[in-house]
Length: 434
Image 1 (spheres, one colour):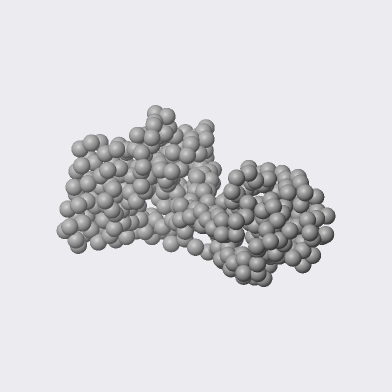
Image 2: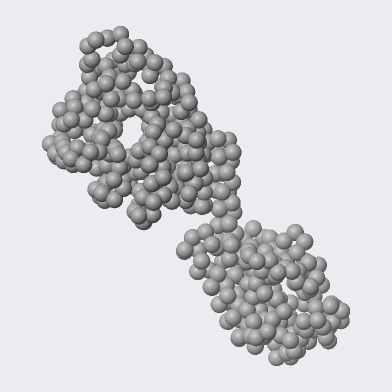
């Protein structure tokens, strides 16, 4: 009569986070409390679906003909008949009531006494029913017992309302992320990285941009994707969008792509990088990212690094994790955060911290890239500290692939036709581009 499905739908609704698991226990406790109070054998919550009802939660004293996750036709049994008024909500002796006695379940289960009330959601719809039954008749059941059932049904409705809302929100978020991926989002813009000693653009950082609704910052998109378990899928889509551009850039040119530790550890990154010249890729791990297991991260990165992949610690100096990341990950590059480079020419404390990081990196053979360079004074101060690889609005804002190619071509043309190299070349390049 009943078909068992392996997943409890109500539990599935509530499994989106640790804080959402507790309500499942509360529903089961409600069932047990009411069933015990009424002295019944089985209590359950059933959800009405298109043509079936699902027993989302079941509590039983001993043996039970149904389990959580079982389904039955909506037209069978007592539940829909109670909601439609064809059976009373309180039945002391099912065999004594012709409409109930005629149902196969009454004899097959058997059902002696039965109490059932609808669960109405806040929008007026009927979610399903809250039911108790015993295998033997119970003439002691009264209207007061029915009122207890109705009170608990209201409590269940309030909980289920929240569960349904959470489930709908999760579905909406999940669908939104999938739609973005299906439309090859995010798109990529590129911020050039200049090597001032070579007077050339040697690479670019790939930055995600979303041309889809809702309009919001990339970090909000990635946070939502992570919240619904699709963080790796969205990061993979971003990396794929970036890598498609690699073939349109000079072979000596590298792309810096951002990757979270969770993405790297998910085993989703390696397949995306297959058939890519990893010597042209810098993998940036933000200083803000929490690394749960450095050994596991190193193990995941090892095959790619042996093939030429370089690793950078991004946003160094922006928090407390920089040194821990550097010591445990042993990157090839460290990127000084904009919070450190902004106003460095006028702030002795910033200069001192940057100088210490630069000296430390030089001592252990790590290259330095300074981010967020916006003024000539900042650039000159960084140069005086020994930084020769820089990016920032002074040198070039994030741009399309076409603009990046024009910028690289123009820079290479100037480089090949001039004998005198000056560190002001990138600034002149920026001015010509506007």
